[in-house]
Image 1 (cartoon, rainbow, N blue to C red):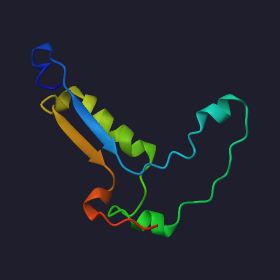
Image 2: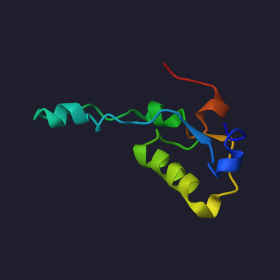
Image 3: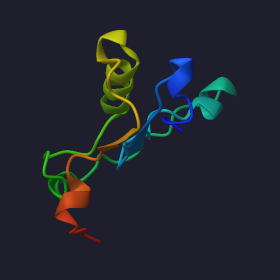
Image 4: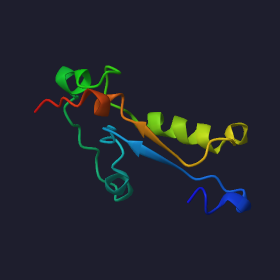
Length: 95
C-alpha cells in the first residue's frame, strides 16, 4: 500500500500490538450504566513473560501511533511496528 500511495503523499504503516491489558476499557458496560467489574490484577508471571517486564497498556499503542502520524516522521512508510514488550522475540509463554 505504501508504494501504491507514493504519489498521493499518504504514508502507510501498521502497528501490531501484543498483549495489551484493556480490561478497564469495557465501554459498552459503562455506557449501559453498569458497574465496572473488578478483575484480579495480572500476576507477576504475566508481566515477567515480557522482556520489558510488564504487560502492555493502551497508552503504549497510543504513543507509537502519535509518533507515526507526526509530520516530523514523514520519512517512515511501509513499515510494521510490533509493540509487544519484546514477547515475540522471547517466544516463551507461560500457561
